[in-house]
Image 1 (cartoon, rainbow, N blue to C red):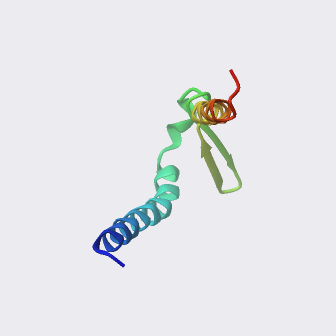
Image 2: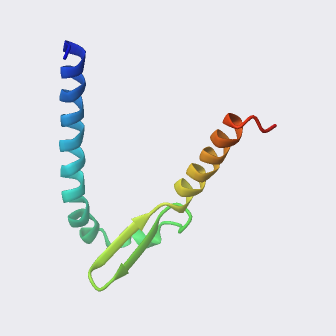
Length: 79
């Protein structure tokens, strides 16, 4: 293993630690912010039921699907 591989693993470890901390902190922050429902649903959709909170962005999902379809169509040789 070269020096570049160790640097990559070090950066990957830091990124995974930050993501883990965010996943741990996000539910606590979402419970403290009751005004999320006032944001338009196309930008941020919040589903709450029995202590379960699910937050997603329909706009980002639509953009992701469109970009994935565009990538697939440009790779397949379609006009």
